[in-house]
Amino acid sequence: MQLAKVVGTVVATIKTKELTGLKILMIQPLTHELKNSGGPIAAIDTVQAGFGDLVYWVSAREATLALPESFVAVDAAITGIVDAVNIEVTDIS
Image 1 (cartoon, rainbow, N blue to C red):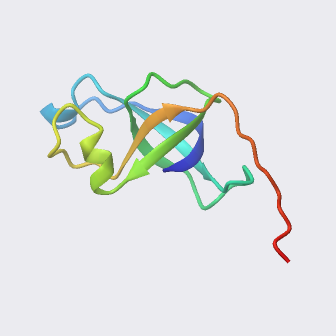
Image 2 (image 1 turned 90 degrees about the vertical axis):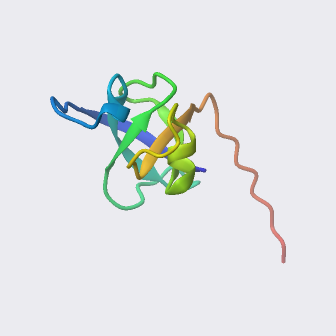
C-alpha cells in the first residue's frame, strides 16, 4: 500500500462495461513523510474518497482485486481513506 492525496477527478463518457458506475480520481502519490512522489495518476475509487482526502492505494494486480470484477484493465485503485498518520522516528545507531 502507498499513500496519496486526491487532487482531482476524471470524467469518462465512454469506458469498458466493467468500469461502469466506478469513479475515477486523480491522486498524487506521497512518501511516508507526506511529500510528493512523482506525478499524479488516475485510480479507481473503491471507498468513496473525495477531493483533498489522504488515501492509501494499490497498483498492478492488487488494484484489480479491489474491484467487483477481478479481471479489469486498471493500474491503480484507492482502497482506504486515512484517518491519521503517526511516524515514530528512532535512532538505530
